[in-house]
Length: 275
Image (cartoon, rainbow, N blue to C red; front, side, top):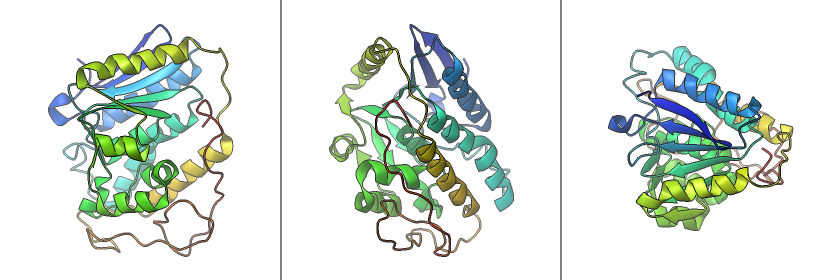
């Protein structure tokens, strides 16, 4: 079986992360297939809604470090972020159809960021979320620093980004990270039921919100320029919060240089059908 499976049934495109022995941590090859699946779903008239989920009790544990072990230089890792990891985030932001995540088990690091890029997240009662980058001295490199404060608010986002602690299922629902909680055995059917309702609904789509998508892409691009590998000391020692500037009227935490110019902050899209 493939590490990432893409199927279409009754207007619902399903992306299944299928490496349960690694808690569905993604490889470089999986990233390429993931981005391609999202681009295909965007242009396929048969697809009305997209569902992302993981196999056998896990959503995604982020990067499979074994697959990235030979990439040791800062430039090399930045290239992987730009050419592989961020292609998935960009394709998700560009998708003009509902994107739903069904999260069972862990969603860690880039795995959590991938879930945040979805419009709606459903979760099982054993789901756990963590922005674990800080544990290895990194900043969130896959859109989490841009997306998380827009979902849970600035103060809570900073606390989660700076500590990397796990958020259990009940807290995730209380924070608005997930729409609803379900028994693990019922999560798949609950997610499919929601997707069917969306697929059978009004037959219209709006174009993506260019301002929102541009801001998100600019944000992850700036983060990529500040990203350094774990085996190289960064400007902030591991376990310490990244620096940020204090700007009035900014809703998102700043993790880049205080000398960087501020970009536009269009806020949230007007509805879940546009991005």
